[in-house]
Image: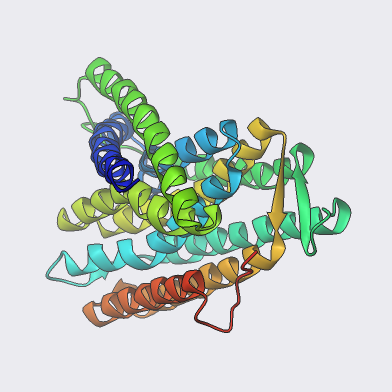
Length: 339
C-alpha cells in the first residue's frame, strides 16, 4: 500500500513537471504569435496568453469529466481561480524591485468582468438547484442548456476584446522577426504534452484521494489547483520581470475568466450533466469573491500592487489553505459538508 502511494506521488511530481514544460512551450508560442499578429497588450494577456496558460485546467476538467470525476475537475478550477487571484499577483509583485503597475483598463474592464463571471457561474449553479433539484439536500443537476449560460457570457467577453483589437494600431515592426510556423509547432507540442500529463495527474490524485478518504472536490481545490496553476505563475512572474505588469495581471484575470466561463461548462457538455453540491459551492465561491475583492482593492490603490499588498495576498491564501486543511480534518465548526 505504502509503495503504491509513493509511486502515485512520484507520478504527480513528474506530471506537474511535464505540465510546466508543455505550458512553457504553449505560452511562449502563444505570446509570440500574439505579438506577430499585432494584438494590444491587454488582449495578449487576457485572451491569447491566458487561454494558453489555462489549458492545463481545461484538460483537467475534460479528463475528469470523461473519467466520471467531475467534482475533482471543478474543484481544480475553483481552487486554481483562488490561487491565481491571491498567489500569482503576489509572486509577480515580489519578483520585481518596483511596485507592479496596473492601469484603469485592467481594473475597470478585466477585474470587473471577472467578478461578473464569478456571479454568473454561481447563478448557474443556483438555477440547477432550483429547477433541477437532486435527491440530496441543496444539490442540483447542471444540464447542458444551463452550461450554455456562462459560455454565452464568455462570447460577450470575446466580443469586447475584439472591439479593443479592432481599434488598436499595431507597430509596423511588431513580431516581424518571429518564425510563425515554428511557433505553431511548439504550440501543438505543448498541447499534446499537457494532455498526456494531466491524464496521469488526475488519475494519481484520484487514487490518493480514495486511499486517504478525502473528497474529490477538496483534492481538486488543493493539489490539482496548485499543480495546474504553476504555468500561470511562471508566465506572470516572467512578464513582471520584463516590466510588463499589465500583461502579468491581465493573464491572471483572463485565465480565471476563461476557466470559470469555459472550462467548467465544457466539462458539463462532455459529461452531459453534473450534480452540484450547493452547500460546498457557496463557501468556495464566497472565498473566491472575497479574494477577488481583495485583489481589486489592492490594484485600485494608486493603480499599482505594492510589496505590502503582495504579502497581504499571500497571507490571505495561507488562511484559505489552513481553513481547507482544518475542514478536511474535521476540526472546525464546518462551512463545508462532510458527507
